[in-house]
Length: 133
Image (cartoon, rainbow, N blue to C red; front, side, top):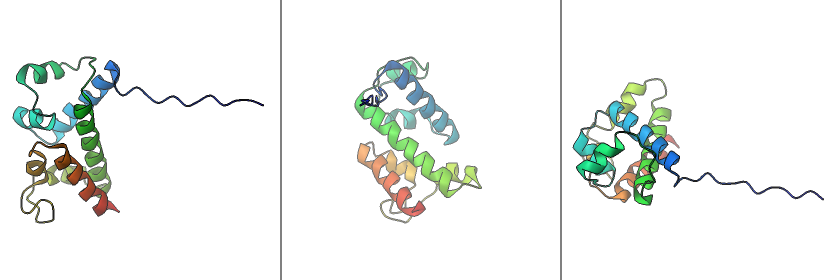
């Protein structure tokens, strides 16, 4: 009887995973036209020196909270790419447009996410997952 090898999970806390996550983050921030201050808030209100270090895309072990935030942003980006599959630019613009739906109540998704809490990112992702079905 042959025993199956357990499937190893990727080490998301590795320095290489940190570099990959930061590469995604900064590419998305360009697409969303986010300022440095907005980016710092989305990364968990990191300080200037940490932010500029991250911009160098080092191999770094990111804090769990930062990885969680970037994961939510990946999900938001994916949902927008699906919803606006024929017009990617509209997805990038969507984050800046005022939205009357709950939970936004008249502010843009980006302004909502800039509340600074992980749950703000989670709410946007959950909203988009509901919209895309």
